[in-house]
Length: 417
Image (cartoon, rainbow, N blue to C red; front, top):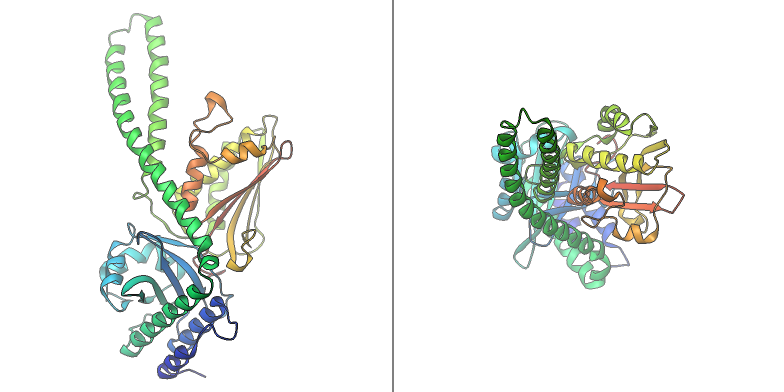
């Protein structure tokens, strides 16, 4: 039986963390109450991370699907009009062309892949500041939001704010521990990226000048074959330097990325021939995905770059050849079962493996086990791309027993969402 908006507001006012109810249980009751009254297919709760440049999905409810604590990140640089509106308005309705600038930001990367036809978002306030957002999403037919819808959305946001206040008093450190760790990792990755990009920019300018003078010199050495050969070797080395500087600059600039809700299974099926070609004749690549997967929010080309880096490392770990196993599934991160499952991409090899000392340094810039054949930036790029998308990179390895990488990406929607 449908629930009226007025009845829903009364029910929301009575939800609390009393009687040993957990925050997750209270959020479930809150989102279900609002979803039933408003007849929407998705309600998600997002909180700002330190600095207010990123919002992180903390909870997602979809009627008929298992609820989940999520970890998807949306960055202000990709949705500037939306972030600005959230800070100025009590509620932001996005239906048809009611907010054309925001609609344009969200349509291709978020709304269309998830089948969303309209959104109604309400900011969550604490002590007068916006700390998060409650997002109500329609997935069937286009919808014009009513005044009653806007009032209920605001009441839902107020209820969520109150519940987080109660949770903060009861167990702040436990609830925020994982969030703070991720925020620190994101900040560290950004600092490394900015420093590397700055150095690489100046370095790249110098290399381009050397290349220009080298090309000019080459035009005067056509009759001296030995000199031309030596100069070509020098220019080849400089080209490697420019490639390295471009990679460094990529680490520091994410504003050129284009994240969107993607189907990882479909993407990997398209990318598999390229991965098999990169693995070479000595290595085979298998793909195992037995169940449908939820969508994730990430730049598809950056995710392909992550997978290529991991595959090349797996290939190099098996100089005598072998099999590289790719597996796709959804599973909780070890030690964080209550957070719900992540879309997991597992890349496993049968190679030499790594000892504990190597594992401890694996993601540090310029650390490499390949000597002069490696830049020491591949795994830094892997970690930064995944962290920027709200995910995690886990590794299991022992000497002589191969290595398994787990790329864990937060879900932006449930299976078939």
